[in-house]
Amino acid sequence: MDSIEENKRRNRFKEVIHKLSDATILSDAKKRGELYTSLKYIYKGTGKDVDFHHYYSDIFIALVKVREDGGEIEIVGDNLKKLYEYCLTKADKELNDSVRKFLDHANLEIARINYVSQIDDKVQNIDKVEENIKRVSDVASSQEQKVNELKKSTDDSYSNFISILGIFSAIVLVFFGGSSIFGNVISSMYHTPAAKCILVCLVVGVIVFDIVFMFILFLSKLLGRSISSIDYDPYYENNIFNKLKMKYPIVFYTNLISCVVGSILVIYLMMEKAFDITISNKKVGDIFEEHISLIYVEHETVFWLILLLLIADTLFLFAFIVTHLTDKNIGTTIHIRYIEIYWYDTDGYSYDCMRSGECKKSFADEKSAIFWVKYHEIIESCYVYITNILKRLFLRYPYMSILNTIIIVAMFIKW
Image 1 (cartoon, one colour):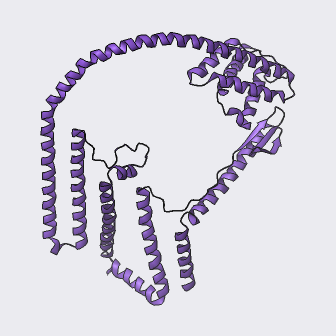
Image 2: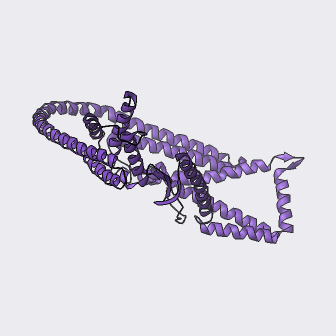
Image 3: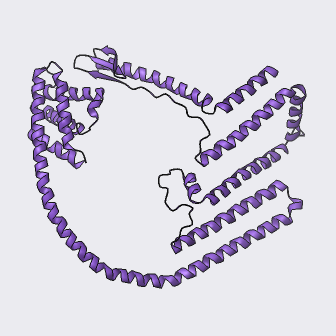
């Protein structure tokens, strides 16, 4: 065996030790088979006889690396013992002897590392005593710093008062600025559509409300006070809207209601503009009205069914958006399917394709096993995806699904 092959096996040997630091690795039959295959390659290579002997230094270096990465080297010993017991089930005496020596040498290195660590801990305890003495000295010297900070805080009080007055002045200016806009809108109500007046007042009102809230929030931070409705920070909430609802519910619901009303008004104004467009000397609104009247005259029942469908789906859409913003759930719980993982295991002679711990098929070469596993994983993924789509369509919101199905079927029957 040349030096290149030897170095390759030594590196593979260190990787096996590092993998054995995972407490759950041997509970997976696939990973256990991979570790056994790796050991067989390390000690035998591509031949049938053992031609490699591990180094003490490699075991020590790998165990130290495991401890530096935050792992427990005792787990390596426990997993290695279980792996040795697994090797005994294979009819390979030479490999079993090599693994037994590996287990013995690894346990010896683990005991030596633990003993040296105990000595280091005693030395560190002495360092902690010296550190405590230094900490006491630092506390005594920090009193002077606290006095200086108190003096600085007193000097900053004057500037804080000026900032507070400035914020209140800005609030008053914003409020009166918004009032003047409201006055102009009200004075021109006789010449402007009502929907546009309401939309302008709504937008200006929300802007004034949010600016005043921002000033008050900044003032509370300046004074070290809290205006939140809860006395803790919901750091566990990833949804920014839900966090805003918990801390400042008035601000959240005011903006939410304003957005919903504003969206309705914008849609109304856009439809009004669209209906005023002229096509072939006819307005879109007139053309639309003619078609609606035609449907109503010829298929009155279908007309009312379409209207019912539009109203129901529009209300559901708004409810869906609002509940997602408020992190609420209006749907039923469904159990979706998950992809069952396929893998292959080998004992050195054949490749067994596994699923749920059961051997589905065996191959003599690795390529055929890999192709079989990949093919069945693709089939399983497509089946699971289609099944979950159907469940989400018909079972997530069953009442809406049933209502839409009934209305659509009734429309086709009456048409």
